[in-house]
Each structure stands twice: as structure tokens, then as C-alpha cells.
Image 1 (cartoon, chains in turn green, red, brown, cyan):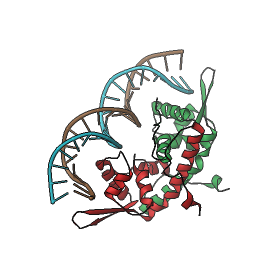
Image 2: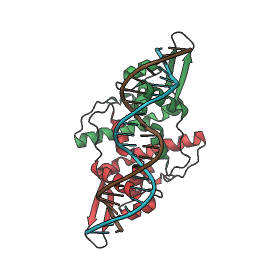
Image 3: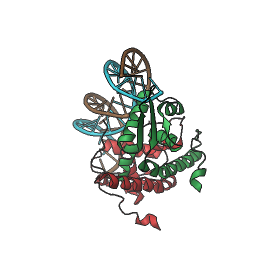
Image 4: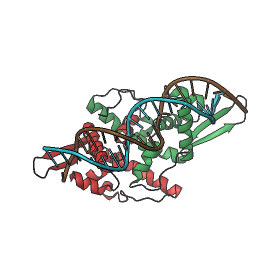
Length: 123
Length: 123
DNA sequence: CGGGATCCTCGGGGATACTG
DNA sequence: CAGTATCCCCGAGGATCCCG
């Protein structure tokens, strides 16, 4: 499927390829709360299509940020959770979010703040 | 030209739109060293086309991360420098870079490390 | 020197229908 | 429930040529 380039002028370009998808950071954020099922994620992200959710999850899995667990039941149950590598990027995402909030404030941009509370990072 | 959406589910998505362009972080990095001329930037980024450099610089300018100064001379001289807002995102970019290096190490990915030395951030 | 104007390609991403 | 499988569109980004 989607492969990373071998040549990067800087690690950041790789990072952007890894988390730059339209929904990736949102997925990571939702999984940060804990393990979730497919439809649970879908409901948490209004506007995302099944195809996109599946695809973005697969790429996150291939890149080792998310783990997928299939339970052999009927009806099927599939759970997603972040790996250690995935958890380690969370502080970075918070940094991005904080700068975004600063930016929005200076530019007078209104937005939903899904990460409005950074409380559990403060400790 | 390129406008930001009004609706974001999270500030991070806005941030990714702002710096997610293929060359944006590279440009910001180069400008982090100080003011540079157009061709100076171009030479510093092998592979970038004139059109892309111009376009990405314009967008960074519109978003208030970069300032463009035109000197009315012959031949023309145009200089680019980061704004306060642009400088404030640098620590965040470093965080991304560090995670990228960690990721590359775990995955055994080789890459040029344009930010291999974080020395001046350590102080 | 520092662009602008055009044309074109390719793949990200949406809509819809089907399935174990 | 958690996906495939198709079809299709649009826009990011490259190549090329022209300009004050």
C-alpha cells in the first residue's frame, strides 16, 4: 500500500508523511483515550467514511503506531489501540496543538478544541 | 489562493494544513538560520522547482509565518525571514524531528539529518 | 534575479454498492 | 460489524516557457 520514501532531507518530512493524512491525528487522539472498536472510532469522527477510516488505520498499523486485534466472533469485533511508538508521539502532537491554539488566537480563528484540556499532560 | 478551512475538529489539523506542504518545514528550517534570498533558499533545497518554492513561500507568508521583503534594485533582490509566529513553531518542529529520529532508529531507516544537531535548542 | 502563466499527471480522498 | 471493491473527481505538485 502506501510506502515511505527512503530519502528524506529531514526527519520531519517523514513524520508529516506518517501523521499527515487527513484523519491520522484525530484517530491517534481518539485512541489515546484507550482501546476502541471500529464503529466506536467512526462515530467519534463525524464526516469520515468507512473507506478512509479503514485505510488510515491500516497505514497507522503498517507504520507501527497502531495495533489491530481481531476477535473471532459473530458478529465480528475488531479493536484498535496505540503501540508504544504511537504513544510516544502524543507529546509532540500536544505541542503542535498548543501552537495551533496560539495561532488561532492571534488570527481570531474559532475552532472546536478537542484537546482543549491538556490536563493529563500537565502532571 | 490557498485558504484554511473554518471548521477544524482539532487545532492539529489546522497545523498540518499550515506546515504540511511538501517543502514548508524545510523552508522554515532554512530560514531559521536567518534571512535568506530566493535563490539562496532554492540552492539549499535540491529538487524543489521555482514554482513550488514561490508558492510555498507565498502560503507561509499568507499564514503569517514568513515575511517577504522586496528591494527595488536591478537585478531584483527579495529576502525572506521568519516572523515571530514562525519562530514560535520551531520548538514544535524539533519535537517532531526528535520523534522522527526515534522512529527511524527503531525501523532501521537511514536518512540525512538536517537537524541532527539540536545543540542550539538545548540551552 | 525572482518570479508569472500554462499545461499536465498522478494519487488522495469521496460516493456508492456489495459481503463474510 | 467491519470491512472490500469500484468508479470518479479534483487539486497538489511537476515541467516548461516567458518576462521586467
